[in-house]
Amino acid sequence: MSDSTVVSNRDKTAVITGATSERGIGMAVAERYAQDGWAVVILDLDAARASQVAEAIGQKHGVAAFGTSVDVANEASVAEAYGAVHAEVEAGRIPTVGALANIAGITSPVPFLETSLDLWNKVMSVNATGTYLVTKAFLPGMLDAGWGRIVNMSSVSAQRGGGVFGKVPYSAAKAAILGFTKALAREIADSGVTINSVTPGAVDTNIRVGATPESEARLAADIPLGRVATTSEIAAVFSFLSSEEAAYLQGTNIDINGASHLH
Ligand SMILES: NC(=O)c1ccc[n+]([C@@H]2O[C@H](COP(=O)([O-])OP(=O)(O)OC[C@H]3O[C@@H](n4cnc5c(N)ncnc54)[C@H](O)[C@@H]3O)[C@@H](O)[C@H]2O)c1
Image (cartoon, rainbow, N blue to C red; front, top):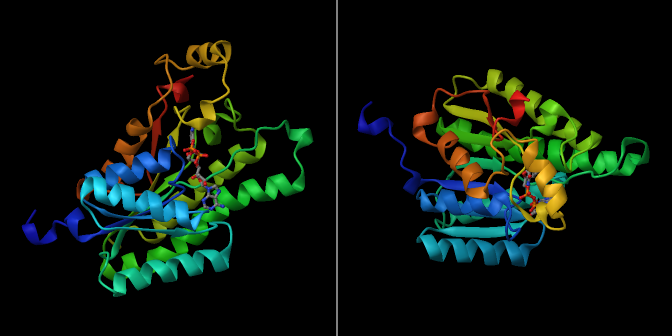
């Protein structure tokens, strides 16, 4: 490969949605992108918090960073967030957007017959519609540039159902993300922009807070590797899928769940 075809992370910005939760996957992914040399944009519900997290990550890793608010489920809010990011790029404060990690998500920890239509719609909106809206906002710039990386957060719940915290709407929404990823991958296959997904099993985030030693033991017993994943293990997969070397992965899903998908 000639040098001219290598895209340096130093020249690009990675946008991460859902990245302000202290022990969350999104924050670990944002940290990893910054460590890899990407400038980072943090998009999450609270503007002040998004900005604070971006600043901290930018300072720690010596990269440009910007944070602002978005409700990924709301078209006007996504348009506004996109506009704010675009303005930062135009002003030369961050490079053009080369990667998008769609991580914002919510769960639905209630039995099916207790699932209200409101909860169903909310869970579908944040997880599935959010992935659609944010991708639709940032994809055109990547297509124009002829290079881009989109990584979507699904879950093993999409493949096996349920799981420890995800029930019916959550599993359905995460399965929608798999179909979305594959269909769009076909459509943009040879554009230079790749879109892939990941299906983690249980990950050590705040979702685990409140778990009892007994429930943790039951969970670990159900995972062939005998433990939940760390957020940095998930972040490493986002890093690889967003790299130049991952150019031949298109519409692929990576199971990162301690072999839970083999159960
Ligand atoms: N933790 C796990 O075990 C696990 C396993 C598989 C998949 N996942 C998925 O990984 C992602 C992150 O999970 P986590 O455990 O870090 O969760 P988390 O709750 O710690 O983080 C979710 C983030 O999304 C943000 N968010 C929620 N609704 C939003 C909206 N409408 N617009 C913008 N941002 C919004 C939250 O503010 C938060 O920062 C989720 O999509 C989750 O479904 C988690």
